[in-house]
Length: 193
Ligand code: SF4
Ligand code: SF4
Image (cartoon, rainbow, N blue to C red; front, side):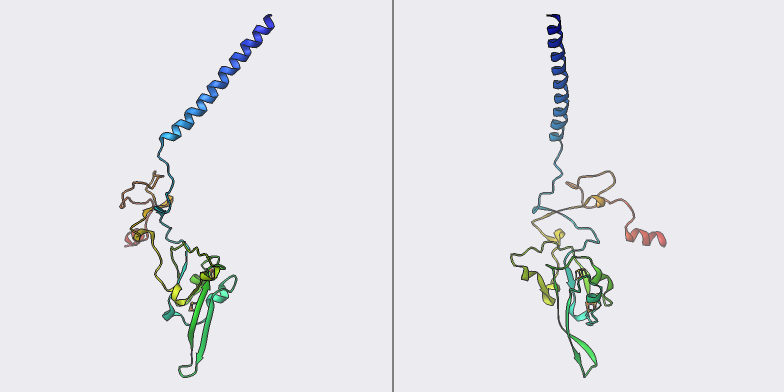
């Protein structure tokens, strides 16, 4: 009889302890519900890509000298440079230029090595299409101005974590002029003076 009572007592003790642990766990869970969600509500809110973000490539037809350096440094020799030799001027004349973004890995080699800076990386990453052939951008499509989240009236642009002021981890409701930590390039120029 005594043994049975001890067993019941132990069981009750363990049940109370387990209940306490569950209560502690739930209190942490409910505490998280009091906090503001840090979710970025795409497509109404979008993060501003960083300064060195490698998005869709921009191309300037008039600057290209058809040297084909971009083709040689590309891991898959992707850019298509179509040119003719102009006998009168003894120079290469660019006819067409295209990059297929369905194949491009956005490594940025072509931008890095182009001698005339006619290629540049934009912050445009919304390139989805229903047809893969639409991703093959010709020189006109490559020359279009890129989409910028900061210029879209439908979108609230949010800063990425490294661009937030020191100690801040949530970009919501941040004043536009709040300074980010670390020296900006213009600050470094000022310091050098
Ligand atoms: S490297 Fe630049 S200049 Fe040369 S072909 Fe490519 S885009 Fe044109
Ligand atoms: S970004 Fe890289 S993969 Fe894409 S075209 Fe340029 S070099 Fe080629």
